Image (cartoon, rainbow, N blue to C red; front, side, top):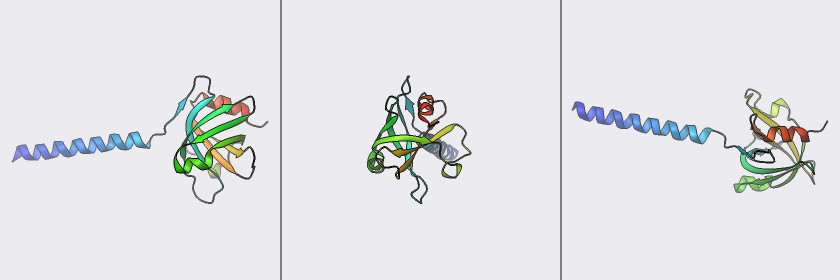
Length: 138
């Protein structure tokens, strides 16, 4: 009887530990940045839609010469994010979670339509932060 209880308890502990590891891996933000900061994988969402932003993993290329960010969104939600964007500034605090100080968020608008606004977020330690800061309007 005691061996069965130990077996069940160790099985439950193993399942709980495995579930905690899977939850931890799925909840962290996926990010990669090139050494020069011109390309990265980050999170992007359409803004001013009336709903809370749905962050989508995107791959971006920062073209500093033309001052544009070229986005390649992934999946169904990423289709609306594909294309060229201009960096217009930092979003208002009401549009972002101001409690997370390890993340930098930028406001973008489409190059051909200033009414379409999006937000781009990446960790502060990213090499792309300095490249995007250089594109901010003065």
